Image 1 (cartoon, rainbow, N blue to C red):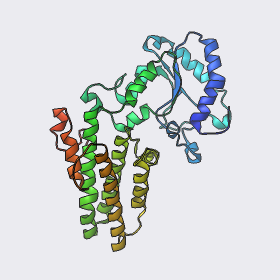
Image 2: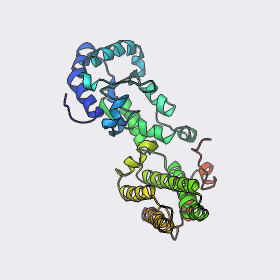
Image 3: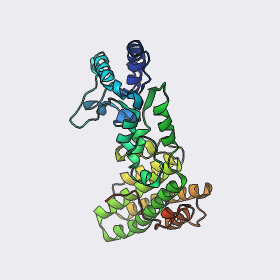
Image 4: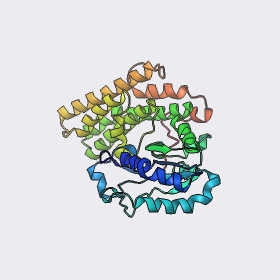
Length: 318
């Protein structure tokens, strides 16, 4: 096993070099898929030295077809046995709140993340799934999948949201950007309301980042990794990320800082507005994002989504 790379690369190497030969010898007819997908920085490829203090190390899932559910106890014992062969420095540590990869059916794995054993099909099924869960359901790597069942669901999820849901989510982002960055930023600054000003820039940044993910047809991971992943998207993701980092890093609140932040906010809006128009998603004039939000809403085919106010987010809970 190579000593290079993060836990995902180490886990793949251990599985291919040590586990797979043993699996084939002891279960020659077993059709289970294997890989490392889901919770944990290693599944996004973002683990580093800081990550090693908890829930880090070599591990893998085994996913069996539903008809092989009866094999789970035997395969679980096999997995416990082979993990004892992991070199001590790479053995997985577990905290009280860590998620431990296990042996389960394909359907049970997906149900644990998205609430159903297959890709969502109906509007209500899509609305019930937090986007960060969809990101976790398609991250990491599949090491083997002889039956193809696990990868088939994964491919369906990777197709991303249906067009109408995508347009609705984009319209919500545009309205949030307009309300926070283009409207309330100035008002909060004039009032000297520092907490509200920080909240405004954070909400604007999240909405702008989310719009970039939607344009790339990629699920946005949860907040801890969202802005790191943003810089890895196709353009305009990296350019937007650079501006959003500057917005987050601004230490001042005086007139010069206000001018810098206003310029950055408008640069983000100008960039993303131009991208919406370039793709034919919005024909709105100017960079005021309310117009872009309404233009996106008008393109929605499904009345249940199109008739909602552009700013209303049916995914939002609470």
